[in-house]
Length: 258
Image (cartoon, rainbow, N blue to C red; front, top):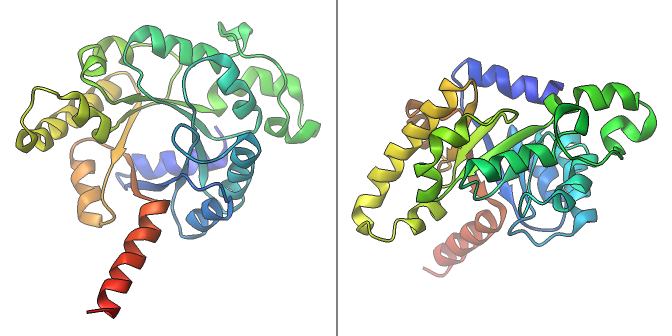
């Protein structure tokens, strides 16, 4: 495990919240700012974010150079969507809508070389410091050098949780409350927060029982983060770049014009 992942793992073992920010803007300086702010990780969002592959690469560089883990959310589990990102050397890959154990296995296989039962194509570049490090050594260690993170963000995934959590080869589950809430089509809106909290506890237990960690989304306060820690959540997003900017400016203009 690299030093960045070891650092956040140690914080988790100590019961301290590990925090980061969703980044959707293409400019990699945003990820650098997140890292310099003291955040533990940057969630580089290539599922919803406005960035191409070169920009994802620059975000990975920026986050890591500023001392943060670079977690890249990819659009799906197809190998062609993932292998280029893996070769950039991120600290983790986040898979959205892991609704079944079959999808979970596909995700792990896409990140794993054939010697370890996967189907990742060989061609690491930045992951081996452009050839400075030994490629053979990397191929043997790669399955443990990049976290594979499964998002639980639908009621289908909750129903399949036990089977998903038992899939070998991943490091973390992550509860996505927004899409999870959207999938609760028969639940009254006022009951959704309590049900989501219960599911967070359930997912955290499933992760722990299988030797994994669990993440979810918190607000930008210590109270919100510690509330999740109390539910068994070890790492959490606390903001999104676009909303930080829009929220700050909207509030500032409102106060100026009051």
